[in-house]
Image 1 (cartoon, rainbow, N blue to C red):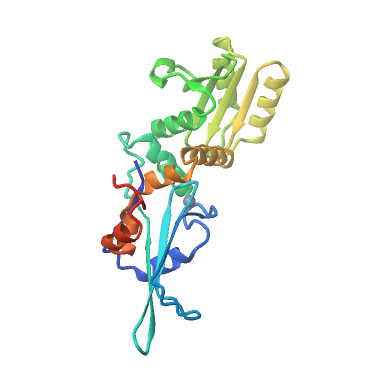
Image 2 (spheres, rainbow, N blue to C red):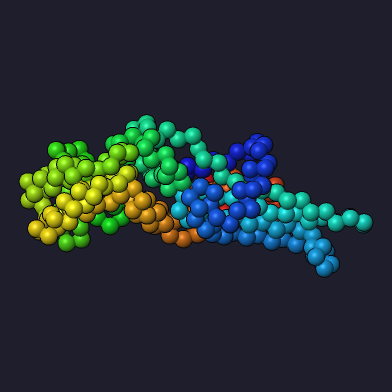
Length: 274
Ligand SMILES: [Zn+2]
């Protein structure tokens, strides 16, 4: 389910070091959240020369990217030594053009790398739109609704049906495309439609939607930037609390930073294994 991999052999130390220090997500730019902190001191404390292990796991609440960093302080008779360790999530190689890729992975991937949205399989993008709106509306299966001008039907809390058209494109949406959705919505007897695109709407398209609205059929226009915001809100709901993050991240990050033995001896309740 997670789009993040842990690569214990990752040798790009410069990247890991830079990424692990970042307070914002290096993918979606969201502020990172502290997921777990771990301190185990061996009692040999003198001023700043604190010996023991300090460790933090940070996670992005939007795309789920994680970074973990910590330090191990040791002291012999003459020297105080501090060793820094870090590990970061690596984005899985995900084929977003492949229809068999799970929608929840596509959704997280698009949150992390929105700039790649146009490589997404159009049907998968459609399913992602349904999945994003599915947190607020009930969605009818696409195959059931497929007909001219409407890709899917959403049903709001009052039972009102809404026709949705989705266009994964780099071209600006024209007035003709708005008319097509409007026609399809009216022919089905609906009073509301939503047009979602990865691009933007032409000024005549916006005028047509406003006119339709003033005549009693609401056509809502959601451009690429606005859809990304909706997608981020849906992603946040995927991780409502720390435990759900932890379930997503799992233990590999921790195992890489500290010895497994160390984790289990020092903090046995740390995180359950999957
Ligand atoms: Zn992120």
